[in-house]
Amino acid sequence: MRILLFTGNGGAGKTTAASATALRLAERGCKTLLLSAGTAHSAGDALDCPIGAEPAEVAPSLWALQFDSQRRLEAAWRGVQAYLVRLLARVGVDPVTAEELAVLPGLEAVLALLAVHELAESGNWDVLVVDCGPAAETLRLLSLPETLGSYLTKVFPAHQRLISGLGPFAGLLGRAQNPSSSGLLAALLQLTAELAAVRALLSDPAITSVRLVLTPEAVVTAEARRAYTALSLYGYRVDLVVANRVFPEGSGAWQAGWVAAQRGQLALLRDSFAGLPIREVPYGAAEPIGVAALRDVADHLYGPLPGADPAAASEAGTLLRVEADGADFLLRMRLPLATRGEVGAVRAGDDLVLTVGACRRVLSLPSVLRRCEVVGGEFVDSELRIRFRPDESVWPRTGGGT
Image 1: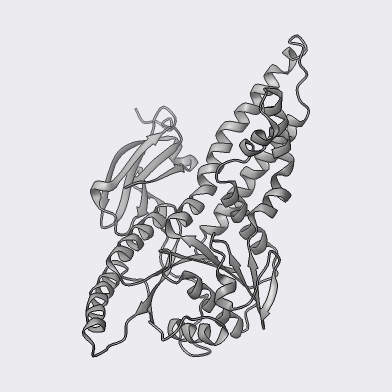
Image 2 (image 1 turned 180 degrees about the horizontal axis):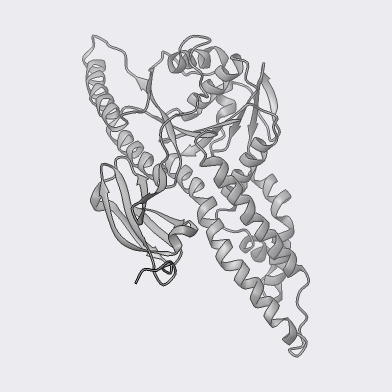
């Protein structure tokens, strides 16, 4: 099973690249599902055929699906939401307002992630190609499983213990514990487990890759560089960069100006994303709509049929690893394109809070590092290195030493 996530600057052509990739995979004999998960839902426009909320075959071996957040919300969250509405109504909130308040911020994004996991786990397809939203929206989406999962793990078990502890006093207070509260907690704890499974699936480089689509312009290139760093911070592997709408050589002054400007940006891209393949798609005479046009885009990305395997997994090393270094342990994280001044790390109990510019990740430390203290850190050659030393109060000495 392979999952390919396409994102990039709004209007850069990520839907076209995702659709062309899905089509090429299908033409190579892979049973492929194209999932439109962004807010624009333009995959149907690129394919030039309507797609709905259920997988439908739009070409041989190619299925397409448009994620319906409202439908998923009603199916997956309605029971929990009904409980919250009743709870709010008891304190005087009117029903309409209560229903609005009972929808957690970011819930639609969570449901989209759960849908990706469900489709991947179904075993019905060889490859799942996801047309995500713009880069900033995708970064928020991909940071959710770890962030929300960590929050639920910390907050709700404590809340459950609190409810259990107060149980004997409920009768004295003249209030019976709402029997559905246990169901609510069970649902939230199940959500925690599902988010952990989503995180494991999407951060496994053997299964999931992210592909950045951009146009070779200064502002777009700068955003793609930041997205690359942020994706690495969150533990997601980028394995391909698509430079779309590249102007061909021309004789006119206007076109020559664009060619020269794009040539400079393409050189910067090759330097910034050294080690990653960069595929160029020329600016066509018309919009790439329909199977024939998408096949032409796929030829530029992967070569004429059969061409290169669009779903080939990257063989690059891991982004995050922990290794023994003498008596110490070294946590190493690759943060490509980051600068030393924007990288920060703070120990907070059993977590490590990592920041790169405006991006923040709360990393739960493995058990071996929880019993250590931080004794140093550095950022060298695009890699954050944090040194941990066993805490002797937790790791007692053994043997006959003094």
